[in-house]
Length: 300
Ligand code: 13P
Ligand code: SF4
Image 1 (cartoon, rainbow, N blue to C red):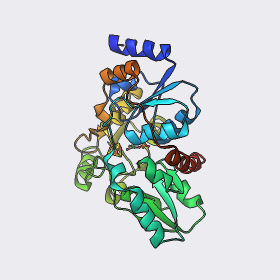
Image 2 (image 1 turned 135 degrees about the vertical axis):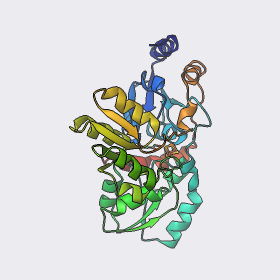
Image 3 (image 1 turned 45 degrees about the vertical axis):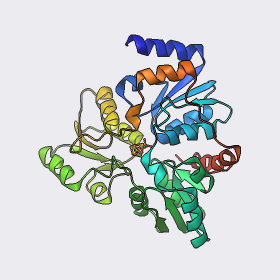
């Protein structure tokens, strides 16, 4: 443990703060997490914590989600500009227009959206529960925003009409069929784990498609010793740390989410010390967005 890590742990104890950390954060931040997990796990933790302050080490939509689920808590994002580009690919107006065009459809939005999009959404989902949400929602016609790749993954499991928005994650969408095939040829004994934000043709090659936490569970329980992993570096580092007897390789070149990596130990310390950057959202948006998030939390 470094001196700075120890200082952060002491400060968060003094301030009754909790550190919620996404799997793509830097290793030194993962090491001091109170809870480390995927988007769904983090949302659930945010909803039930009894800490006074949530320091969210992730990106803006995750911190906003925490605020909406725990409106009375102070929620801090250590870097104000740690956003998710995919979340900015659809606006509330885009969704309203689609709803007007398809009045009989229900709207499912990936949790990777801004709060005002959640406010005009029927049910949010994460990559962990997207299939269950779409299966169970009370409509055979779904508007799904913003991730086209997650939508196409969901479509394999449901016999419903899905109207797909054309957003994508620049980190996962970069993983190419060619580099995955090459990695499989280099390591024919390895299993291929792929995140559903990857392109359909890449997911087609996978032994397992799942959220970051699903990959962790799967790799831990599997007898396989080598894995090729199609997701962001932070998760691959966690897999290797927690399973030292196994080997984990990136699917092709290492993929890094620059937005997730904006947060450093220094910014976490400053965040706690100066109470910055506090998430503040309009009440009206929070109330409507909470409905779609509460619905999401009903699904595993
Ligand atoms: P999960 O951790 O929920 O799989 O999400 C991945 C992601 O890209 C979050 O931005
Ligand atoms: Fe957004 Fe992709 Fe980064 Fe996740 S990995 S925060 S979806 S850009």
